[in-house]
Length: 284
Ligand SMILES: NC(=O)c1ccc[n+]([C@@H]2O[C@H](COP(=O)([O-])OP(=O)(O)OC[C@H]3O[C@@H](n4cnc5c(N)ncnc54)[C@H](O)[C@@H]3O)[C@@H](O)[C@H]2O)c1
Image (cartoon, rainbow, N blue to C red):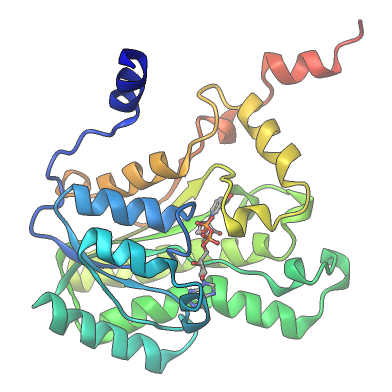
């Protein structure tokens, strides 16, 4: 009993009121495993208010309504590839939250080639374009809708999630690798204008493999996540830990961090090899 209580206390994250009075939009909470779901819960705990949004098709699962209830937020459906949906979302968000926004999370990814089992060397380019639009160009569309509506407060923060396959080869990550490279470039390019004109930060977080619907879609995910865990000095970063890192980027404590791709991976990206991985290859 006592042990149970201690475990609960240990797993509970502290709240610091870091986002008190701040307002924003969170894209991509599909179910309780989603990184965006954990982020919404943490933003709520830190005192932030937000609109939840996802593709109309994802609404059918209905789970987002539970999150909305729990966090006292409104759900506004928007297909992140539709300029019309995004413009409507930004207008309605400002109206419902009563002013400009302080933070936006883009937590969206999908490859049709991966879903349909098309190998990287045998892509269907209609699938490629669709996946690029959803996973990469949508970030430009979100930024442009916010920029043109002048929807961000000064010192606001925009974050998108990415993966290290943008820099290094992970063969089964398929065309998502190219989409992530494009996404990270948008953060730098749009971040320049957002910084100059509006004093707004734009960054990407490059997260460890994480067991979510999108993550598990990657072929051989189990081997992949275990390998990353054994390679990383601190082990893989969880979805909750990613949420916590995102909170820090939404807070006023990181005002001069912008145009960055920030690795949140327990040290994986700078590790050549770990003892655990070497042992797996050592001769008896
Ligand atoms: N899971 C991982 O291993 C991992 C690692 C690094 C980065 N990421 C990135 O994190 C982000 C969030 O993914 P996740 O792992 O939480 O998985 P997830 O499947 O829970 O989230 C992906 C979200 O994208 C949404 N989406 C798809 N098409 C859309 C559209 N047209 N308009 C609006 N939303 C749309 C889905 O409905 C879903 O909510 C993605 O960008 C993903 O690439 C994930």
